Image 1 (cartoon, helix red, strand yellow):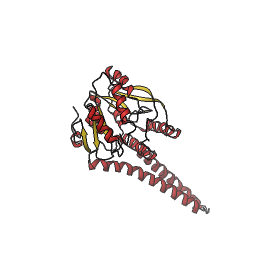
Image 2 (cartoon, rainbow, N blue to C red):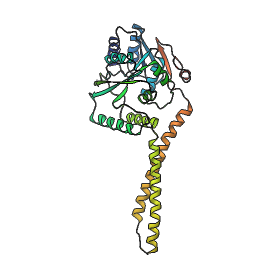
Image 3 (tube, rainbow, N blue to C red):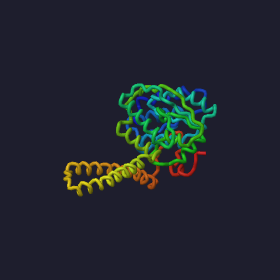
Image 4 (cartoon, rainbow, N blue to C red):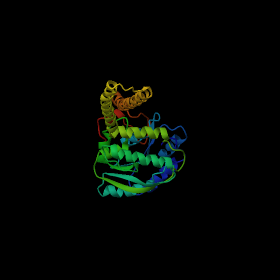
Length: 310
């Protein structure tokens, strides 16, 4: 949760009602909220020990917050879900049925997305189309982080401690038996989205860089292409020179230089994106820092680096 005082109570109530009759725990990660969310969560945790609250020391981001929750979840099956109530907690019962039938990963696929702009729907469609073509791991279109993981799949996932995280891709990468459950995504219950365009672009870049080397390969192919064109231009220029033909080319030369320079900068930028991610990894900083926990034993992130949950 991040500044979700308008949804916190309703979310926890709906989760409890959806899981009635089952042994359950609700691990809520407060990702640096500045509104009344921490006070509400403290009240809910005091009233029900099954509500476990992890308060991070600052805002570490959506994927890191989910990772913190997964690190501290103790169940035989764990469901990742956002607190904005766009993903209905009532669907968890259906996920559990598939899990009991033998599925290790059950991911929810959106058949309709209420309350979202045409721009976001269009860009989301483009993103999944691009990822389907460049990713080395098959990713289900229109599936988000709302999914169930069996303990075996979760333990495999928790061994992956990379800093630039794309969890929906990582859960596909671990394999196991995976099943899709369709659902209609509802409009946000209250508050504003925490994913503006800037964060969406950064998230998309993380996804592509984490599961594909195609951008680097395209840069290499572009380099070979322009080198080939340059070699072809050499005999043409010699021929014009031999036969005394004047070849005016100031404008052409400027355009060519700008074009080649632009492609070179793009290629350097692509390399820089991957190098930057390598730099993030070698620093080996913890993925997140927990300030305090309620009804939950706080584990250090560096202990999770080498030891599966079970």
